[in-house]
Length: 491
Ligand SMILES: [Zn+2]
Image: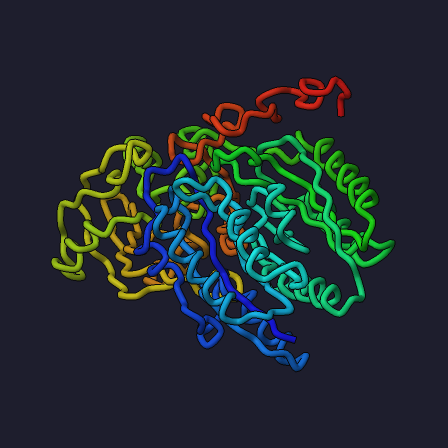
């Protein structure tokens, strides 16, 4: 059996002003056929799984491009087309192929392409032909489209947010596609539109039990796979809403009934699962009144959702209200880092920090700081893998106000992003991490309390007010009942 593997993706925040071009892919992940000869990261991990599985089954593996960009604005058209066409050329050269497995994101938008995954999978199908089994692994923050479902035999999304399960989902996709290739099963997909725009945290109830239930339902009664695609709230595309995807063995009606039933369960839990987000000034007031360390997530400036990660709203409030003994970051500020590297460790300098990228970054802040530490090519843990954060600088201002700046834009995954400099986080009153949810696994154990804060950043947490132009269908929470609004049936 010949198995073709590849990766192409990014999570596109169509409201982000940062263009996604060649440099972003090169900085985040770009391999040309040899990703599995390097240590796995979040995006290449599925390729490692698929190679291992295919080779242990005695198969031949053809590995193509593995390209992934840190979330930002739409991918530049010529960049998307270049990577896509490279993958398609490799596929053409590898024909005939029994299985084609691609690690995608599912919320990738390029100039002129609202649905990159649909475009890519359709072209793969055209080249590979009807006999090749095509499977895609998706981030759960994806937009499932009819084009994707029409072109693929099977799509499986992560089940966990934070994303701790790309390995497990890659195993399942391999099994699903291999069984189809061997003629053991006939996977068919059904999708139910939940007509909701929100975020769902899976380590906590009621989502924790919902994920467990999805898994209990898999593997029996002809149900092969169940995915809850949360959607990506900051991607303005026609299919942006959350969708339930069920794959059954040859029975589309059965898959459809279950998808609808599970979608209704998600709907009924909507008030309990809606994220509790506190306006940032109130969040800082609450933190000030508590014993530390309190962890505040600066959700609206999460680079993992396409934000610049240089917004200063929380920092300005920390300074204005005189909060002491805190650390915040990671601020993406290559220019300030350049000054710190020139000045060296121990230097005291007036530094202009953050607020550089766009209006949603806020104003830059001029602060007198001491350069306490510099780490070149720093990294931080993220689950089983390591994320490169570039050159990182630890700054300390008056009142033990600490900041960590870095040169490769990315969210704050883990306390080590700060602690690797030698600072004692347990002695601080407040820790601000620029992240929406991936920070949680690492930071929750050291926090007396975790608060999710909204600020005027790139990720508007008021889901009812997101300025969609291409998502035209009614959705909750913009309307109270999007089903009544369209078909009068209620939900
Ligand atoms: Zn995601």
